[in-house]
Image (cartoon, one colour):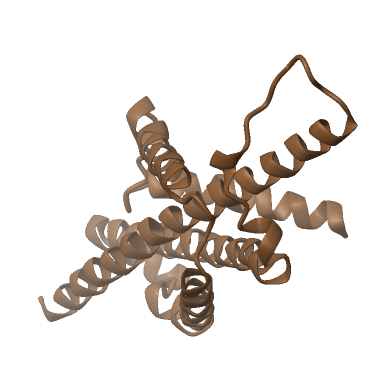
Length: 211
């Protein structure tokens, strides 16, 4: 079961990343800037914030972020469950055979948007759960997770069991802070992307019916 779960999450991540670069016509932008520019910017911002966060995440940040992410999870789960069928209503085989080029194009666009919304929104929920799990460490181990990384320096000439354990612990704390910040930036971007694209799509669909 665990193997299947990891497989599903990896597949969801790959599909979400792909659909972020794909328009409703099904054309994917595979350029290097489309694939790596956003990730590079998020990484740089996360590293800068890690350097500025001397004592880790403040208590109010953990509390506020946890509540906000929980709300986002609830909203997106509701959107996935109740709104999916509203975005795409497949035409019957009889109508599809009689449909003209414009109707077939609109059906393809509706189908592509439904997949885009489902993958991106679902992966956003998974990221929110990951961040909530990572932030829970600050609540369970507040003193240890709020270690000031600037108070430590390592000397390669004096390596022993204690210094190795300390290095591993601080590395874990650094990675935890990095992924919390990186994933939150990704969640913010994906939320803005999903909301704005949903409004654009629904507006286009309404205008289509009014024509």
